[in-house]
Length: 460
Image 1 (cartoon, one colour):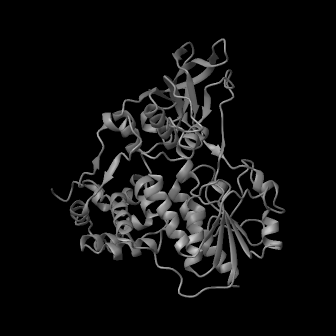
Image 2 (tube, rainbow, N blue to C red; image 1 turned 180 degrees about the horizontal axis):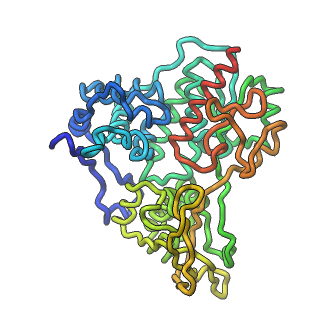
Image 3 (cartoon, helix red, strand yellow; image 1 turned 90 degrees about the vertical axis):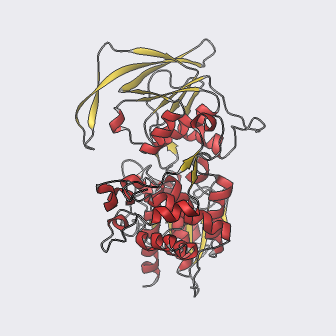
């Protein structure tokens, strides 16, 4: 295979995987990884590093893979990332590191994400763990939320020697990694739990079932429990809806609820004590990664699935890999289409949804062409479930119970993106709680920046 074409990655057959929750992508083996690593040009000015939100030394770890030095590659990645096995699976590499790879100018970019996954998975099998702090500091830091931003911030602070405690509202740690992303994309036991164990091995303490703002407030953590700094990485778990007629019908879910019940509560298992509805025909409204996750989950529950999105295929915000997998599995895309009304049967359950055709007009403030309704183009899709995947916003509980913490009009916490500092002294924030719903790796980048900011603040 020449240097212009990447080594293909093995996957479950589409027809087979559409019926199970096992991981779709099977990853590289040693031979495949080392072969792909030879494609890296080891650039003196690596653009791939510039495209990585956590600034992993990508050429260095790939050269170590090429040499068969998995432990060295893992420690190189771990200096910058607390969650390499996660990032290797769910990062949008095509628009970040791989999007900057010079190999991509005349051929395929180096498969950086799959190589990162190979290193993390192999290191786990070999029992290799990240290196901890050489010296401890007698200073306590609280981290709110155990999602990607919280785990990253906690891990980095622990490596610096701080006494870190994570407070998680749910009964299980991981945030969106456990409740939002399905098992077939991100295995919970073999990947997420192991990554969390690695963070705890650095000395990080973890307390679950602690709802900040109810169980204890940020002010109480700082004034009564001796925490000298606090990082808020509580995510954005409050779903948005369209506010169209019929949206209160039974059988209408937010993607957040649908995925949480399936992923965290294992509702897809027929023996589950909290089973979820198994729709016969389902409409998923939205075009992002969460919409793809919801659609592919519904498919695995036995549903015919339609994805309704108001723009065209080029404008779909979901990763191309996820869209491709969804199509291979048989999901139907109704593009340039927007819902206008949901209809109920005599018992109050969804029976159909009326949509209208759209066309693209002038670009909006985001630079994307605005969708415009085509009058008289309404049509109906019969269905027994509708899943709304329109984004999420932060829960206002923390901001409303913390004195002096500023939020913007979207109820997101206002924080300096360079160091996470909020309007309240000693309180930092990052990830979806600040930006609204975004990617795992961007949340990690924010957690990393905040750890550095906290260290600078506590070192004064």
